[in-house]
Amino acid sequence: MARSAQSQGVSSLVALLADVAWRVLRIAIFLSIGVFLANLAVSFGLVEKIAVVSQYLTGPANLPDEVGTAILTTTASPTAGYGMLADFRESGVLDDRATLVAVTINTFFGFAQHIVTFYVPILIPILGARVGVLYVTTRGLVAFAITLTGIVAGAVLLDSSNVDRGAVAATPDGGAEPHTDASTASDEPGEDEPETNLARVLEALFETGEKLREILPRLAGIYVVVALLVAYSEEIMAYLGGSGQALTAAADGLTGLLGLPGAAVPVVAAFALDTTSGAVVIAPLIENGTFTARTAVATMLVGGIVSFAVSTFKRSIPFQYGIWGREFGSKVIAVNTGLKIGWIALALVVLLV
Image (cartoon, rainbow, N blue to C red):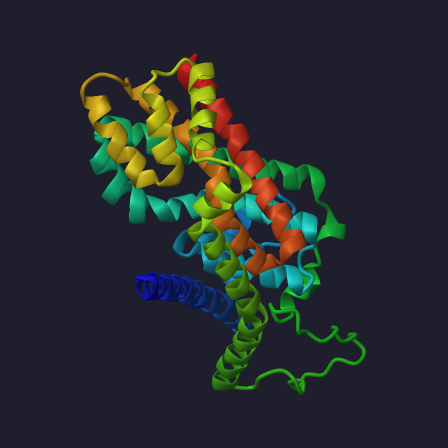
C-alpha cells in the first residue's frame, strides 16, 4: 500500500515536471522566434519599414519608431513581442521607464491575439451572443484604455533621456559595439558587420541562441518552483492553517458591495480559477434570468479582479521574471495589475450605475 502511494507520488511528480517542460518549451519557441525576428529586422533594415506603420503609437509616447515593431508583434505572439522589448531594453534603446511605457502600450495588442484564439471560438458560444459580445467588448475597451494610458504616460513622462535612438542600430540583444565617429567611418563593411544575407541570418541565429541560454535556465527554475507550490497548495495551506474558503470570502465581499445576486459568489470563485469554467457556470444562470447581461458581465469582471492573485502567481511571475529578471519583472507585474484593476473597477461603475 505504501509502495503504491509512493509510486503514485513519483508519477504525479514526473507528470508535473513534464508539464513544466512543455510550458517552458512553448515559451522558448515563441521567444526564440521573437528574438530571431528582431535580429533579422535590424540586420536587414526591416525595422524602419515596419516602424512607418507603428509610428502613430510610438510617436505620441516619445518612443523610437522601431519599438513599434515589438508592439505590433504582440498581436501575433505576446511572448515574441515581450522578447523583442526585452532586447531593446538590454541594448540600451529603452531605459526602465520607457520599457514600462512600451509594455503598457502592448496591452491591447496582446488582448487582440486572444480574440481569435479564445474569445470568439470558445467564450462567446458558451455565454451566448449578447452577453459574450458585451463581455469581450468590455474587456477590449479596458485593454484599449490601458494602451491609451501608456501613450499618455509616454507623452508626459518620457523625453530623450529615456531612449537612445542611435542604439536601435545595435544588435537587439545588447551586444553592439559603440558607434564609430564620422571621421573614422569607412565605406567598407566593418569587421563585425555581415556582408551577405546568409551571414546576417547566421548571426541572428547565434544571437538568438545567446539570449535563450541567458533566459531559459531562469525561466525553467521559476516555473518548477511555482508548479510545485501550486500542486501542493492544499498541503501548504493546511500546514499554515489556511483554508480554501479565503477565495470565496473575497468573492462574497466584492459581490455584496456591488449589489450583485447571491449566485455571483460561486461564479466569481469559478471564474477566478478558470475563465472557461466560470463561463460554463454562469451560462445557465443567464438563461434562467438570474443574471441580466450587465450583472453577468459585472460578475465576470469581479471574477477577473479576484483571479489576478491566482494568475499572477501561476503565470505572470514565472513569465515576467523569466523575461526581465526579478527586480524589473516585479515592476512590470505591478504596473500591469494596477492598471487592469483600476480600469476594470471603472468599467464596473459604468455597468452597474
